[in-house]
Length: 208
Image (cartoon, rainbow, N blue to C red):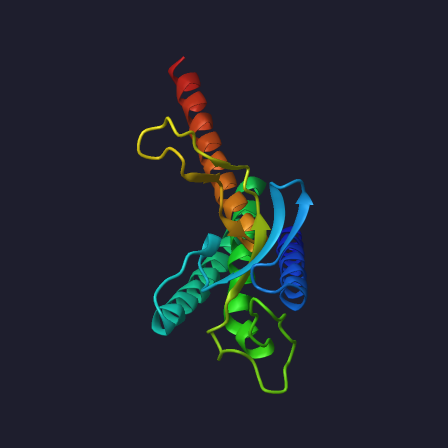
């Protein structure tokens, strides 16, 4: 269990350090170009779902946070069982990544409203402001910052219906926690494919 715990800790550490830095140094919508125009830091906040999606008002936000807490707990219990069982490392690290990503965004939802002032388009947030945070427990917003618009162009006029419209490929804005969840799910798919292939090989050998 030691290595998965280290992986989880490192992801959470990187995720939270970057989020706090962005929160304290960027105004909403502020950008920093890293590599050309297609690799940027772009600060936005969302209500807690991956890639900037939202779910309802305050009640929806509370339900989402509670659901994620329960889901993270169940994932951790299952991860522990996988380690005890001696499951394949790929599967163990997949669930470790998913768990770390879930917890990373849960931390924002639980505590950021309590410890930060509101971020606006004109001012950066303050840490532990005298007037108190911008929201109550479980009502914090998740910080997102990675923005990779690989294609940002205007469609040719000759295209029917959409000609002349602005087109942007991959306009999602996300964070380290979202990346961890996505990679974890991707690895699970790969591991499932590998298990299926191994079973087919075993069946083929038994038939021979």
